[in-house]
Amino acid sequence: MKALYLATALALLILFGARDAYAQTQQPGLKMTAEVVGRRYCAGGSLNILQLSVRLRYRNEGGRKLILYRGKNFFYQTKIRGVGAGGRQYEVVVTNSRYNDAEAEDVNTRRPSGAFVTLPPGGTYEDGVVIGVGVTRAGSERLSNTIAPGEHTLQIVASSWYESRKLAEELRGRWQGSGLLWIDPVATEPLKFDIGDAAPAAACR
Image 1 (spheres, rainbow, N blue to C red):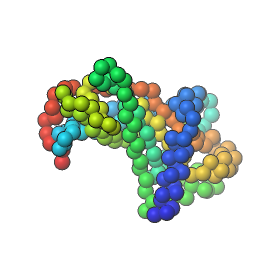
Image 2: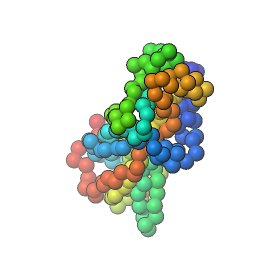
Image 3: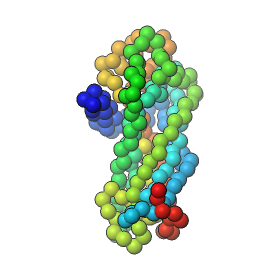
Image 4: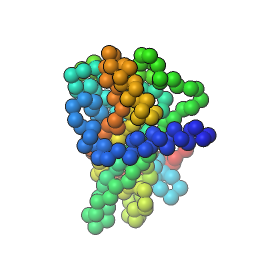
């Protein structure tokens, strides 16, 4: 449990402690785009619940090969922005993780292992994440960490590396003949989506 806690804390520091991550990651190199491919809207006890299935597409827009981590351990931060009562803008931040320590994942190898994918210039790789958020019912006051019915934007920041920065730099040097190991967080541009005023058709299970 201690190892899991330390690894989780480290990944969160790498992902969310980076200054202006969105601005940093929009330079030529790796670009991530998001597409909502599924949604589930159901009625909970005191709140409605919205689940969005989002497809993430990574594209190498640089001029050299990129080595991208695609293993078991990812952390995502989702920023949902909307307009509440009185026209005031609000932001809800949802943190998602996909972490599996059931089997050791050796990333410190001579060459990139199966935990990585190499993208040539113009190459793409797809992944996905499910985002869940509470929705305040129409006519009710919006609660903390929930969103209200209406139009919103969604932006995802995703980790690209969960181990230490020191190991990443060592692997970059070791693997430079195969490409550049990408270790910085990547962010999508804000994506619009809408939640109508109608009540969900079914109760949550």
